[in-house]
Image 1 (tube, helix red, strand yellow):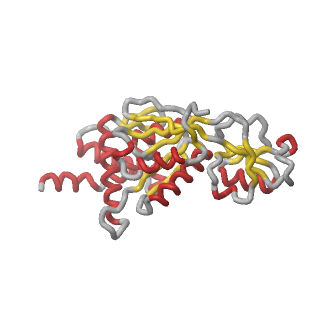
Image 2 (cartoon, helix red, strand yellow; image 1 turned 90 degrees about the vertical axis):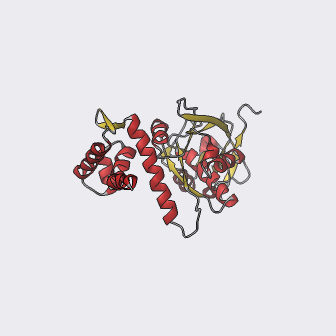
Image 3 (tube, helix red, strand yellow; image 1 turned 90 degrees about the horizontal axis):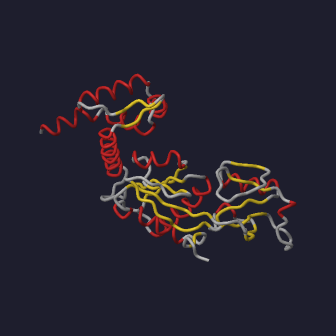
Length: 282
């Protein structure tokens, strides 16, 4: 009973604490939660008083979790997620949502393709993808904001596991060329922001794969994208791209991916994408 009273005393402050921890900013969390910054600050102070330890350290204009704060954040996130899983479905044992972060819009398209493959194999899985730039993605992993990060580099951290998934194969997508082949010199190149391949000439840079495809149709140009049969490229012609492939890495928190239901299935789906081959394979 004493344990229940202690947790009940903390519970009202935990959602506010989680919001501030995820954004590492009281003001950003206040906007997201639609409450005043002063109310969030007060909740965090009351929680710190109740647990008897500091939860945040100030770093410039932002906040950073203390080791104890990080431990409490992971426990809070897991507790809230379990409650959400239990109440969002009428079925017992509903799968928890797996959140995949991608460091660029192009990798986000790959993540979406692998997520769809995962859901086809396991309709009960709950997958979510989001854009997580690599400079922010590691922090999101450590805070528990995402479960896996797709990027172009292996992340080195004592609490993380990073493995190569393979190399992304690319193709040029364009409108029909009357069977004469793609004349790249005569067509504008549309590039997605943060795109992996070294594309020297770009008439237009856009923020997403879908926007790139729309621009190709409007400008009668071409774009270079992962060759995975993305739904948005339907109606475009595919031509082989000679550029060097990108090595794709997956990074997640220890323990290994098998410990998170659905994450191992996603990793297998990523490896199975036809645009990926084993690193170093000819």
